[in-house]
Length: 292
Length: 292
Image (cartoon, rainbow over all chains, first blue to last red; front, side, top):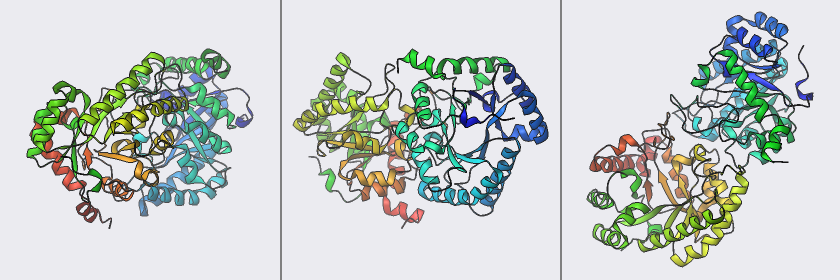
């Protein structure tokens, strides 16, 4: 059912469900199929809402392959019983990911607890948790994909804020079960992006795009992501490096934006496809920007 | 008149003028003196407003030493005539800094121009400009202090977002004329902060503090800085590393915040002193947080 994601030669769009967050999974998948989209990034809660069996039928009916399941983790800030519960939750998410045919599970590090504001200590807690999770990932046949988030969110969401740091945290863990997820919005500001992405190479488990502009809206400045091309990120250049590093899978458009969420489902998908075709399809983009 | 800033043994507060931005320089300096503050970080515009001679008299009358002049630069996005004008402007700011007895001038890199979104290209333009400025800094006896800004502002304000990157940009330029300014708000999220600050060592020309919390207010998310202790930054730990790296000068409190700016001048200064004494005076802080 699922095409071999890592043997594709063209840049294929995957619709991350966050982009159409207000709409149910079934409606989203059917609208995506009608728009010619072949891949979807699922979120755990909507899958749980309709159940695994219904999700599997939906994927079979629409022909969509799952590029990722989002998201589990939030481990770095926890210890004791709270950490055990969080690890168990990641294991369940790995099982869910396997059941829906996802090659990977997005893992968010977790933030800094008030009791210990050391990022390096938090890295150690995260590393220990990843070592415990790795055998479960192997058994599930699902890759754990650690995602650096934007430095804005270091306190509450992710102590991992750069590609180099993510690679340091997962160093020497098996590459087939532990990788990283590159989100352009979270990492485009990094002066080492292009070098570090080449270092990441086969560790790249997935790649997500959206666009950045100030000001970021409240609350918590989370939902200011834009359609590709509507902000300042040089997606052509970032994507070219991700490709050069060896990543051949689909590219997820993952947008958090209240204004976009207020649009009709079909409009969101239409604009997603249009912006992707304009800014993520490399030859067009490269010509437009005279990068080749 | 000015005490030897780099031979102090206790942590001394400097009031950066941004913290009391709505108030005139003369009123600010006199209120600072009355509050027992010994150092001030000046901004160029208010100094120009009253003139160099009046500023010199004010400093003599209040006994305040100047810890920094803020700010010049915005070079990385420019070329041609625009770049020439920006370099000339930095030279004038160096002369002004000399005239008011500042040991350094804060240099902001500048953002990414639409015509070329490569951060490495922007670093090269910045480096070339710094090489041209270095002799003028030497002649003026004022250090250029490159300040990494928060990654939020990479597009419009500063392509330099980490300590390591700032050190790379100024590498091999004379350390006595080109250094870096560490701002806790801008860099606390960096997992390499404590390592990189030790690498910086004698390159540290200044150190500014404030505190961080989400959400950041509009417009442009610039003015959400808080008094030390009101946010999530572990200022005790960062400051301890800055000290361990060898920096012995005053610590500037630099806050951008519309709510704080709406307070009476004396209230802002009172709260600045109180939060500084509580969170930046190392022994108290270390005991409180059991770091020693």
